[in-house]
Image (cartoon, rainbow over all chains, first blue to last red; front, side, top):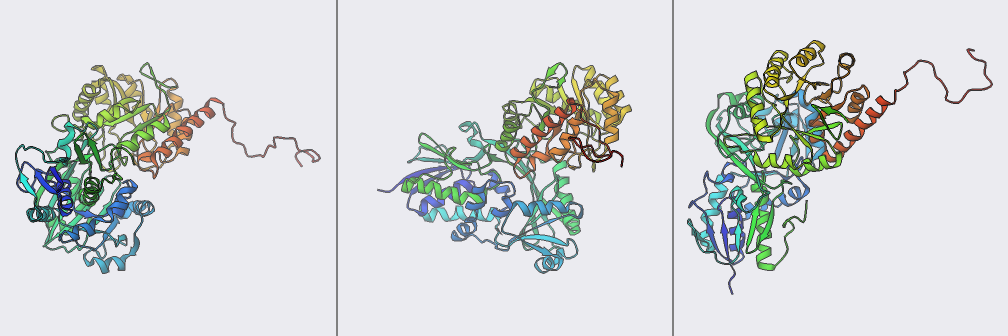
Length: 327
Length: 257
């Protein structure tokens, strides 16, 4: 007998869950208020860094361990993934930040000026020391979401945009909208910018450590760069502020003055769904299984959560990140 | 334990709530340290429709008395508006008043601080001003109605400890009856112990705990340090001296040889 399931929510959690279930032969109905991934989903605004080791600076251990499989999962779906690593740098007076970051993470080596210039010629003379996380990767989140969406019909997934009767168990992947059922879920506001800086060539994400404003830039190709991201304890999903834009743009300018002449293509804002330990998890409530709390780790952790959801439904395997049994 | 505006707090350690890896880690830091007061910023989190509610609920649940602050305010009007919002949100007359005068060092603006403190005290707030160790400024703040002062140890987030010991000692000596809290600039428990050993009533810190590799352990370390320092202060410590003084008499040697 064919297993059936309904996935509610078409952001990164919903699309990954639907993909993983459908790949294992489950007849999936995906419900989202829009036909295609777009700005209504928090993952639309993501950076797309697959950086489990860097995230280990503050994230709990499961993020570092489970996140390492993310790049392979995305490649397995046919999504282009750039495996070029991550660079971490700091301005001269914040040198200790780099030492602290190095102590709290693993999977990196230290580059001197020449080593950095070899990887990123445009950063030559800007920094005399950098950490290089060679095993990390990045992808273009919007392209990845669109790609998953477009593949689902071939996997037999049905789409519904309105209210619909559930077929089989429901995987609720609505992100922050599921606060009605998950009282401990909160929003963490993030603001980002997209710039076009054709004069600058960066081949991989660069993180600039700063005691007040942690900052990263992710290349999207063709001279387009995503700058991210603020992290404010607020569920507000609108109203990117001048202060946040100033912080992000100042950091970009400090990273490389060529950003001064860049064109601002976009200023984005949304709120990430997070549980109190900032770890994602599945949570069962009767017939509904929530897949939520991906915080700033949507593209990094959604594949692992999707696998757990499918293991639970297809093989009755209790997921590692289930309810409160971890962290 | 220190008394702030007729309220006796439960610990000499006060903690900020920003920059922790997660709210769960924040809660562990409070639980392990027994910190009695939690400061929380409202300026940036408020948003259009009280969007910070979920996090503020977590702060209320920490089991500590909430001291909202005006972090991020650079003008009198901004600080006063933020204080009003905080009073409404947390239903408390307490406000930690920050009026930042310099964007890079985050040094308090002494003139704006006195003005904002005057307005808020007249309006019934119980103001905890974030100030420098300047004695004249302290006097002005007290004269407009403040009954607690929070001098810095060093600029916010630097972890440099008590950079002007002379100034802080003078402040303590000048205002023996005013609760004084060292706010900002502490990086290690030894520096916090030094503050309470000098007679400061409490310390407030955030970065040193939130950015530690194990925030909960660091919070506990600070809690023990402030108690150690306070015990020493109350125990009337010996004065340092140049000559060695054996605690058991040395026999068989001529004195002053």
